[in-house]
Image (tube, rainbow, N blue to C red; front, side):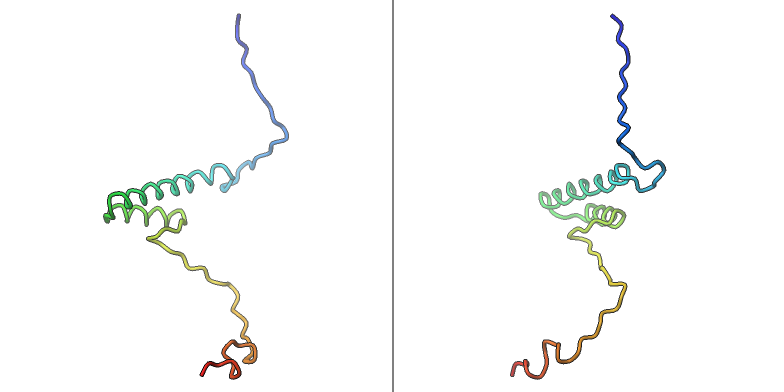
Length: 98
């Protein structure tokens, strides 16, 4: 008995054609980096820190935008904060501690 090849079609599923940020492909490198950083952090917890491992964690976290105990990110507001009136200030003259 000869086997015939099977094919399956799912016309209701639509994927982006030529997007550089298409969902499955764009998340795999960041997912890999997250897992690698987790592994390296576990190695530091088990064996103690060494400069090569820390450098690798920092390099991956900067490249893929992952916050670690060795990196941080500053988020800035694009619009300036509004000034509050003196009466709304928590340190107005009526609420000051003496």
